[in-house]
Image: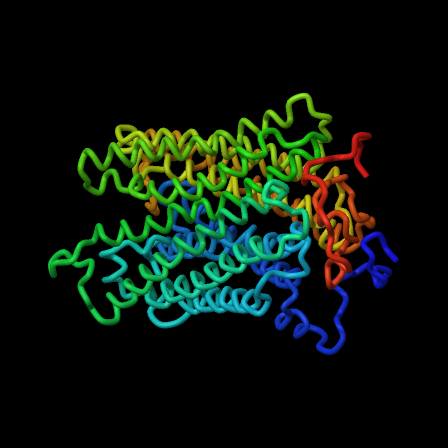
Length: 544
């Protein structure tokens, strides 16, 4: 018997080994094993991330110098739209919940699968179908959509490009997200192991729980909005056409009622990753466990009330501006609680600066810069000055790529040894991190200055006074791309021929680390009974 009670643990491939019966690709794409579904999501997300990054590099090359003719205006608009649609709907929203959430949630709560395994497989098939429909919109009919990822009316009603196909893809992806959220909520409520009370859940599970409620409650609004755009184009209803009694601002309200909570679908799971990693490498219990857990729920609830701060310049009453500005500052409080508690956990900790912790510290830095710049935009006066400038582009990428992106990379370095049973090269991982962090800041920080200078976003060309900042950002994109290549090559090499990781290379205390690496097909041979919290480390300290 192996330590987890599995007689078949001699096969060091665990669940990766072909099951009896169906083999090859079919054993994956028709599998209801939550671990395989999580890896299917992860593989698709990383492939699409690379595609979106290449589109971003193409835009940066176009913007490197004023008057650059690398991309024509229409082509630039199409590339800009595709970059946003891929990165937002296909990568960032499902990045951690659908991949690491699917893989790890049952392991964290002592279950052998999610509550609805077949529904889980359907959610992945819907994700894949949505991705395929999105790519069909590029190559069929009258060309790739050119509206930007927001599909703002009236342009999205009038353009002759494939907007209808693109919003259909978003509609399908929304169903995938809703099914995942329903599955996670039910799983957490119904399948926790004996003794695993709400106060003993890992903070990663708490973050998935809060995220799942946003997916269930907010995503239907995205589906309705996408359906309305489709109906406007196909049936010519005039819902958003002011000349026919419609209201174009109605679309903005509907879109941001979903899309601002969607920011928290992206960032909350990354916060959960950070909350699980810091105690492991500080060798301390997490500081303020209850406050971090409840702050996730607070972000999920209050974050759904602030959508109209995207619309201060669209036209609304002074009272509405005051209310939404106030709520924007309120929603920053639970995020600040998390940051202060993370830093308090590190204070006087026995810190081991391993790659997962380094990416976590990078997350805290990038998210803090992005969050503070978001507060500047929450004030109506400052917002009106920087609205639709590169300041917003910088803020958004610091929070979403600097936050969610680095959170995803931290999760990769923390949990890939558990998933595949092999370790990557530590020194190369540390080197790749510093290249990535340098590239991110050189790419995005000049955009703050460009925005304060008045450089509008979404433009395919610009005036000469913005040339220096744009050139610096393009150089930063090259450094970032180099860092990403170094990181992914190191991870891939580790998975292929790295040293065996063992069941618990980090000395962590959550349930997934009690299993062999990679985990067995059925997870737990016997239902575990939980007697301690997720951050109660052995007194002797040190890493396993």
